[in-house]
Image (cartoon, rainbow, N blue to C red; front, side):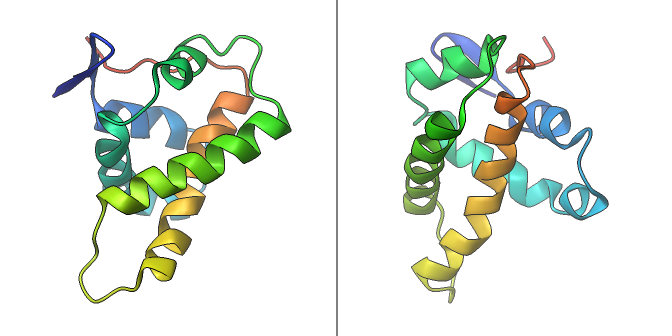
Length: 115
């Protein structure tokens, strides 16, 4: 397990939280969600960590649009799927990032680990 801004970061625990109320389709993709979160773990800006872990106000649509672009690029740069072009990787990663941001929009606080 890595630490992010001094806090333990457990991608599996985070995936379980954001997929808890999600569709069966996203639950089937849990390993990919974990992979994206692990790729983002050491690259997440401190201000986003603060928003996600204390999202009592939630994110507004403008913040979500901004973070969607930034986080998709960060994850896409960190993840390489052999024989898949970058544009296709982005199409795979973007909905997963969107799901994380939709969780933040709900106003629920995200815990970074079960510990």
